[in-house]
Amino acid sequence: MKFKDRLVQLRKELGLTQTDFAKKIGFSRTAISAWEIGRNEPSNDDTIKIADFFGVSVDYIIGNSDIRNPEELKNVQFANHGGLNTEGLGEEELKELQRQIDFIKKMKNKKEK
Image (cartoon, rainbow, N blue to C red; front, side, top):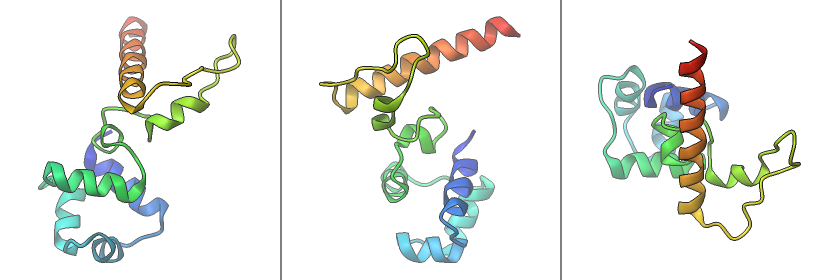
């Protein structure tokens, strides 16, 4: 999923119109529309601001991860282990763990094709 798709999804989950979202985050409706159709992309700083607004990671909003927030990894349940013990891991370690999980999924999908 790309940034434009995630932005639309997250905005609609909150029941916001482009105009409502633009007002809340301090951008024009035209900018929001351009992002959502993929004509433009926000700057890195603006992407961080948008991710913070929705409470998701930048990796999620730009489509690099399907985990909305690294903190969600603390709740991942494995069938044979009853859970993933992430106690003591910081945000960077959780992001690295997510990158590893995403890599494993990618390799698995390639094998299945």
